[in-house]
Each structure stands twice: as C-alpha cells, then as structure tokens.
Image 1: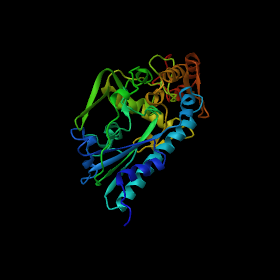
Image 2: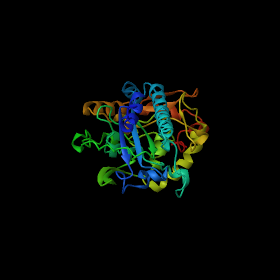
Image 3: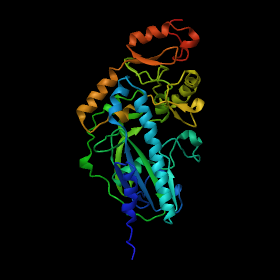
Image 4: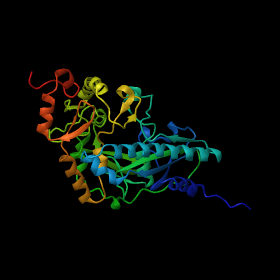
Length: 354
C-alpha cells in the first residue's frame, strides 16, 4: 500500500523548501466576515482554502538604504524576493492542480482588481496577503498595518495560493507575542502621512478581530513611495526621490498632486535598477521609500537606530548625469538654485526666487 500523503504538510514543505520562513493556511470559514479582499471565492469560485507564506528581505541591506549609502543592494533584493514569492506561488498552484485541485497563484504585488469604481487605479488587490497572513499565523499586524514576523520584523514579502483543496486552517499567533509596542517610529518614518495618527482600523476575520492604524488615501503612498516626491515636511531628510513637490494635507488633493508631478517624474533619469508597474508613467518605478516596513524590527534598539539613520541621512539630489546623492538641506537648496528653470521644474513646483 502506498503511503498516504498529508497534503497539509506537503504544501507547507513545498514553500519552506523554497525559502519561506513562515507559512499558514486560511479557509473560507476562517476568513468569513472580512472585507472583499478576504473573499477567496472572488478569485476562485470553488475556493476552500489559501496557503500564505513569507520570505525575508536581507537585513544587511536595510541600514545602507535608509542612510542613502547604497540604493541598489536593497532594491535588487526586493525585486528578486517579490519575483521569488510569485514564483513559489505559481509552483505550488501547479502542484496542487496536478494533484486534482484547481488552484490560483496570487501575484505578490502590482496586480489589481478591475471591477472597482476607478478600476485598477483604485489599486485594490484581488486578495489581501496581509489578511490571510495574520489570520493564519504567518505574522502579526503592526501599528503600520504591515505584517510583522517575530524574527525578521516587517521586512518580509508575502505570497499566496488559493485552492479548492480543503486544507486544515492554522491559528493566528498569540496576541501577547506581538512585539509591536506602538513606538510610532513607523509613522515618524513616513513622509506621506499614510497612517492615521489616532484612528485604528479593525478587521474581523472568522470571528477574530485584528487592528492597526487606519490608512488614509493610498494616493499618499503612491505619491511618496512611488518616487514622485520625497522631501519630508521638516525639510531635513528625504526618501531616495530627488523631487520636492509639496505633500498635501488633505487626501482629496493627492490625485491632482500626482498628476502635476507625473510629467517631471517621467522626464527625470531613473536609477540603475527599478521595477515595472503598469500604472507608472513610463511603466517603470523605483523603490525610493518603504520606510515604515524597513525601520520596523523586533529589537526596539534596532528600530531606534534605523530611524536615526533615516532622519540624519540628508536630502537626495540628482546630478546632471542622473546619479543621486544625499547632501545637507542647505546644500540641496543651493543645488536647486543653481539649476536653469527648465531643469529645476523637474524637481519642484517652481523657483522660490523668481
């Protein structure tokens, strides 16, 4: 008699064998009552379960990225890890399909629903890896809304497979084990103001409540993380974006802000490595931020150190050859003032001294 295969353990083994540091299983029942992006049947009408897993980003590249010392290493690692997550999901879905279970791999990022009021421009995922991850015990929600791994913090990439196989769900991690103490360094590291300073969002999944800082308009993240602009409101530090178009106070002003900054963004020389995105001007984007994810670490002293590195990293400028470097705020002002008006318009709304 052939040995009976434990499908639950096999799917976990497949992803951990490929490098996953955590894996969990949700079902239609354990996600019941959640938002539309927790509805597995939207992606696969026959869905019964989902497998979600986490891959780590390299910790060694984070401080040099935050400190404006090394752009390429973290960006390349981020791109490759995202591709690996989507590839593992594809492999697992193919395996399950070969075992007789219709399955769908979910891209780890940059693929959006088309049936919302603004279509893909609403940037709503087909299914939320984050919801599946916290409900299945892959990690906890941090105040930022990012998923936190007990060892690697928020520096992880998530992937998922939705399947008609009836797998056994795994339990959420004990809330008492969540290292997030709401230190608010994630909020302090975000130039866009994406996370609400006071209000919490509460998500109910299968009778369990999960909370994190309410996220304001996602156009905020598009504008800053997308590289359209990058200067923090203090004027003392920036993301890797050399632009300093104003960051609006109100959510409803971001759509026009992005439109105004899109042309200059498309005309500025791009860094040596980036990612491709169907909605970006010129179809190519850059990892200029991600600070809320990268600052967060299980060790609070590491968090503090990373935030200090960020706020002392200076302001990024772009030279005529396209290269970027961080300088003091005063040096950045002088650099801009020396530009001819047509070039300066690539970086800010208009000369301060006209």
